[in-house]
Length: 136
Image 1 (tube, rainbow, N blue to C red):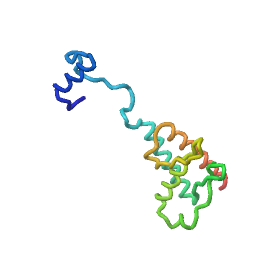
Image 2 (cartoon, one colour):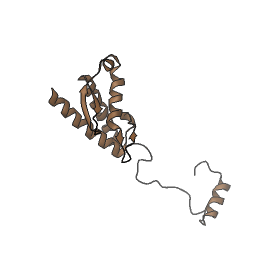
Image 3 (tube, rainbow, N blue to C red):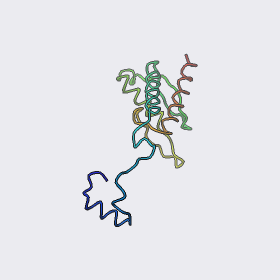
Image 4 (cartoon, one colour):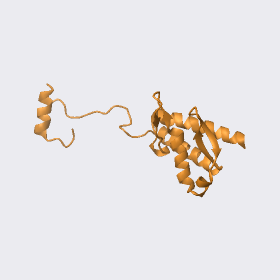
């Protein structure tokens, strides 16, 4: 409503049967107003670090026939690529998922993840790190 000319504002308020003289400001809710919380920023950082750790250890992430994520050795093709690019692909694979309709939803990079998808992806990444540590 900021940059709305006063005449237009008055018309809008009249159309909604409100008194334009009584409404002079707008209050925001307690949400993040479309941004990300400090906790999400920290989780995104953790996610990026987990993906980098997987790649730096010489592994990548794949899905089996049941669409379960697992750790696998990097291919020769991946070893010659830029490690950050491979890590981004790892994050995208971890954050992708299969819908009930058996449709694959593409993954996102760590910096694009938010909310529940970020939390689930981070849990999966931590589980994969533990699996990687067991492999030695």
